[in-house]
Length: 309
Image (cartoon, rainbow, N blue to C red):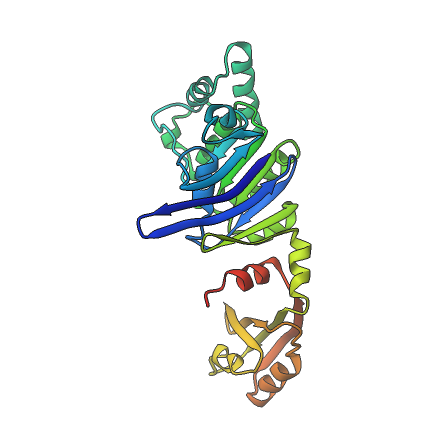
């Protein structure tokens, strides 16, 4: 469905993407991951014919996105990170307008607008002015716009950005359902959702593809990597500083819950640091509620491959 070969995009004094190559097959749900500035949005904009490339080629459904842009876009529904909507139009009015622009007409126009309103949960607000809608509903309007011409492929760039937890859950469920009938290229920072829904993951960093594989295979590559989960009350100690002194510790993150702290310790591959952590807690007289080893997650893979040198 997507074929990218040696794609490069350069700006004055800066290379956004550098000679990247990847494919997305029909029916796949692929997570497109990378830190901010890695080249994700640039790649998606090129695929969507929003900007030209400096070098290389890209095609959608067999159509070159540069030479046969209109044919390629007929197979594509694109939802950018910041959805551009006409906020003074009503929801139905806007979707009819967008469908007409995409070549939908006659009886099919009315059917498709009705279908996407139903699918995206917009029936209750179909006559509302878009500018009066919540962020969550605006995202739904943007998704309905991407779907209105029945594309084979959806490219979704951070579809849940700026939403509250309930809105995120709702949009995620909608995307899961869409995956049953569409090929999806999904850019998101919510790695747990990628693990649950994506058949494959592409990781891009500094304009280059670092990995392309299933989440399970990527986790296996780290083998013993992972770390320690420690829930403790370190008293007057900082906790993080003491843990970082243990040999084999890569980094420590902490979440505070009242007087208790949850330390997530990322360790070197094949390093089981539970004894060292227990000894530290005992020597420093920390109160401990939990000490366990955790296996490698997609987040560990992501950090390992994109961590700045």
